[in-house]
Image: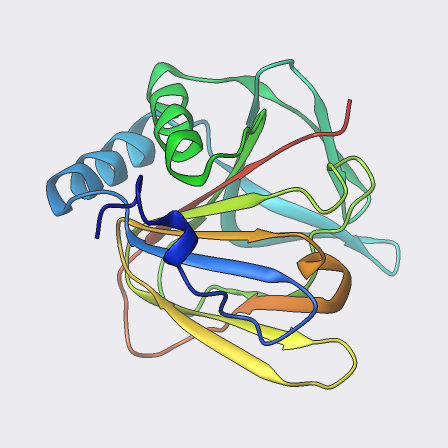
Length: 201
């Protein structure tokens, strides 16, 4: 599929109340392998933290936060300062912007060491992000299932995200849908996920 010329033909994965486009392979296997190795070695990874019932919880999953304006990102009562985009992240951002016809000014990266690490149901609806803005998710490494659940009807929609694949959530998706990365015993391989976002001005 020519992603640049057939964007309008990509089907919305959600039946209502939001838009999720799965573009398939935006990066070749060689590009995907190179990106995985590069980001694994060069990104400034830190264990994720959250505060639950007043206690600081440190997860095995690692994250990193990058942006073009040294912005701050806060969730789970933890504030993080963005690092400046690396040249590799800027090149990826430019390519994804061309494919999706959206613009992004920040990137949250996640490193899942194996299938036992995932994310529970949540929405990326923090106030510092552009309301109804696009979030582009790029996957490298292990193949994992990604799921959506409607907040009212509880309907579940799932998609398999392979290395090199690109998925975009936008419009009212975060208002009406939760999403998760379910743990799995089917893989022991690690996965790197990049989510390009737009911070509100």
